[in-house]
Length: 434
Image (cartoon, rainbow, N blue to C red; front, top):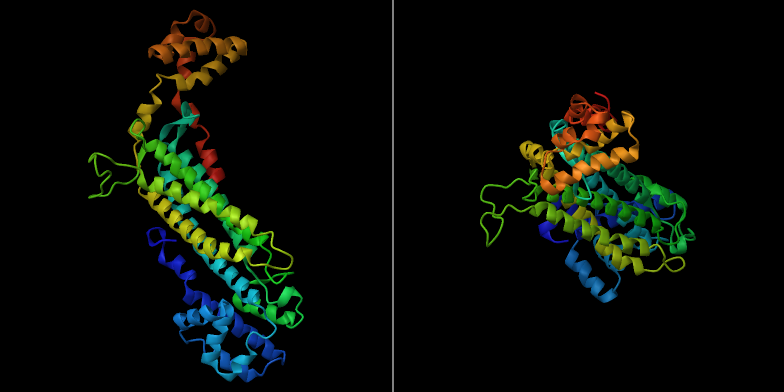
């Protein structure tokens, strides 16, 4: 997590100040519940809450931890310095994981809320540009080779549908980790009432973890980070598409190039797809954090802390990086330069070969066997590849083809509009009717 690829709102979730504030709220709400149950005096809970507006001294907590080698004890010691004697009732029957795991889940939930908002902004940009270019013809490619015509709006609609699925994955991931555990050592509630957990969960906007083993089960977190990895892969897919389409030989789209921007220290003419290349790299980073999250599921017995060092890194890094990536991709889509003239030029690059399937089908409809129809069409297509001739002209000059199809029937096979008959239907499926 470095400033270059970070945005302040997401970074703030992972700051020490935020973490300790959440720890305090967990402990304070637990004290409220303990007081309601008569386990601790009401005045003790009230004394704890008086510290709610106090700015915790991060340096002091770090100094205590340097001696105790335990972060939660360091925080509780500092809290006792603020609260006074009543602090002896804080953390009654709780264990460190109750605080750490519940806090971590709160941070992940808050991060998910930002990511979902990021996704909404990206979806809005994709939808706007998709409708803008719904009927802009371009060539579709398979294996990187010209296939058949499509529209640039359909490319963007496909990206919208993919990201809409990813939004649902983020919502599900948020639900997955929105749990609270205040169950004490090994999760048996031996020294704390389950009603304390229920109270803290309600107060912090979480669900009760049905069964915790001193830690919240890490399959939840594995699912969360896996969802981030899928989103990152979709970001990379869209970025890669733009990078290919920006190549000089293609140049159907281009990242916005700002006044004063420089593309190369050596070549003043360069306009490189640096933003989408950057997104490709960031996606690799995010995906690299999925495997450690998966490996965290297998902890020893009721708990160990092999997951802790992993999560202290991947929690901030994955969410901060994906937040930045989604915002950057939204900006790329929003300002993407689109060149319909280049798309039209590329459509004609192979002198009509993109209509070969239409000719094949017309021949079969006219009574020619599929094998013979394929042979006739491919024979003429290979001439175009090798000699640069016109496909339609070659077909019209082929006696075997003309024996089955008239000139008018052949020309009808080259009608570009045929390929776009169902664009409106596809858009209705993706974006809804109307």
